[in-house]
Image 1 (cartoon, rainbow, N blue to C red):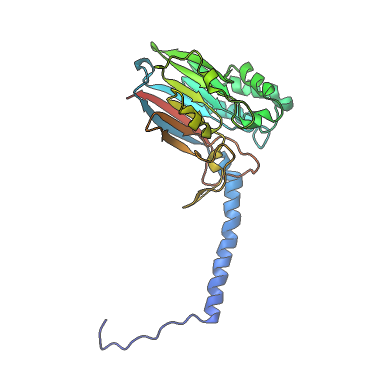
Image 2 (image 1 turned 180 degrees about the vertical axis):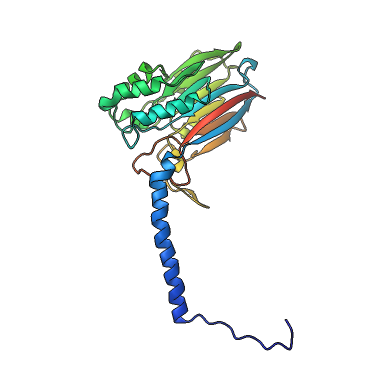
Length: 293
């Protein structure tokens, strides 16, 4: 600053200017709040995120190297999601050319009801060259899990309730295990692993992601889960606001447990529950490519 330049008078915040700025800030907030709600209510729940993920494992057999697997979860049919929307989702899944499709629970929000036939038709459209597998979620138990299991099985999925199956491809094999819901079912991973070889690459389907702490006790390589919806509403610099029981520890995305022994992926789900909103937490299709390390 030039020493010969006289100092400028400081600008004082007058009451009038303060009220003007406060009014502008308030007006901006009033405009932003409805816009944010409209986005969360009408836009984001329909804005599907197709998330490509590569997972590597030294235990994966060479014959399964490059296997392409699609996971979807938490459809919540009957709560702002219907059979035509499920048919559209099926076509999207088919466009991803999956070899295996895994569904990780909460097909319905409360009950199958009279739309069961339409749900079977929509799910039957999903194509996978190696196989389609499913587990039940907590909402699937609300009005009887057998009805939901019947829909899935009738559509060509193999529903794994404390059960497992060996899957072969390209001369390689892996074990796919599925457990009952941790909240309303009686998960028994020991039973689901019956028949699996200890050296065999094992994929576990569990609706609840926090079951991973139990899975660590077994030779499980990869667990796919849903349930959390990723929080459904996430705030900048804060993350999820709330998650349900058994999705408190592992909420969204990929985790490594037991020094890399177990990889866990938590899918954000397709539908919504309780509140028809999503914010900074788009619905997700997970597309995995399995690679031998």
